[in-house]
Image (cartoon, rainbow, N blue to C red; front, side, top):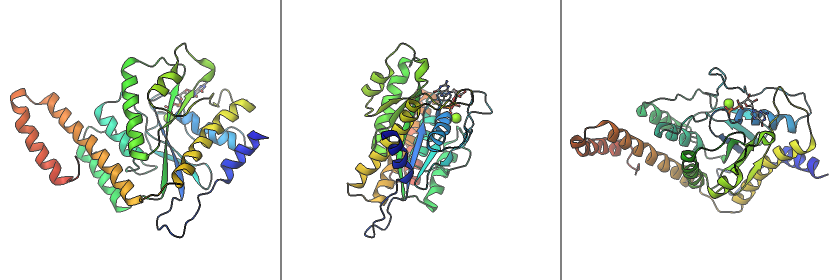
Length: 296
Ligand SMILES: Nc1nc2c(ncn2[C@@H]2O[C@H](COP(=O)(O)OP(=O)(O)O)[C@@H](O)[C@H]2O)c(=O)[nH]1
Ligand SMILES: [Mg+2]
């Protein structure tokens, strides 16, 4: 009865309350990332459907038209302990998108609010600063990267994904769990190998449940539950190590600020005239480090 056990394991999973720790983990946040249209929202719905006995429901809206693409950073409470976050997906990972992705990953942008794809750094960073008012130390962040097997990964994405994975590890202490969707429409290339080469430790192929096709089968449920169980294994592993929640958050913030700084410089490089670049960069550095003293 392994499948039933896995389901029960997920439903019953609680975080130990340790009286010696003043900020123990109280929630597991499964943080979904990936390019738009690869099945993040469908994965949210699939998780609910496999864990509950109710009919298939669209908790998260799926689809590819503009009005359905997820723009909120929306949180869905899967169990009392586990919440799944459908982060705003990225289109083409430009520098700004990268900063926003890391701000979501590091949990510096609020849940259930629209994530603006803004060109304006001051606006992004001021949202990040706002998060200091109610800093979160009690969520355990597990990044999950969703990619569709229908799609051939373009060469330029391989490097992008590799970099994102390393940064996920540095920010959260966990390599993203890779969820390959559209298992039944797999195209020729070996995505699993590509993701393993990018550093992924766990790669799981699934077929999402959708409004068109949600016949519950054993294997389909088992694959989806396997993803959640692996996230819980990451939590258990982490709980065995000593931790300093404040230090961890600060580390995440420093990494984020480093990215933000790099994108400011990159933008300047692309816009400033060559002979002006050094002078303008020195000015930008001065104001940046005045504002964010530990940003480098
Ligand atoms: N058949 C099938 N369709 C899927 C699968 N995953 C996602 N889809 C469909 O692909 C489209 C985009 O998925 P969505 O979850 O909105 O992608 P998101 O932008 O990453 O949130 C939707 O129409 C989904 O129903 C899958 O595993 N199998
Ligand atoms: Mg979506």
